[in-house]
Length: 144
Image (cartoon, rainbow, N blue to C red):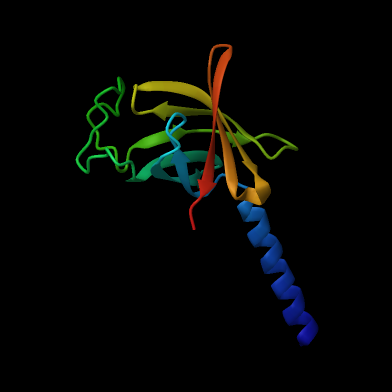
């Protein structure tokens, strides 16, 4: 019986560690220029692809009723809280990176190709947005 319980606990611990090495979860993003935490973003697995939305805005200048005025697609005029900013992205075979998705910068309304790579044991997420040959990388931290 003790061996069965120990095996179960080890299996649960391993599955928790594996879940941590995924973009799925709640993340805090940080402004590149000021270092200020801007928002909490919830990333979920939606049929094998990533889906992410702003769960809470945290910036000192954030307004609870703010909308995505710069968006040019179906998100135009939608509230920032609840806004879908990540669409798509699947795990690359044999790698801990999710590629092929898109990420929206609601401040300028631009959408970028994106990749998502868990680092530091899954406690941080390297988010890279691409526009042509140029890219920008942010490091998000897992919210507890």
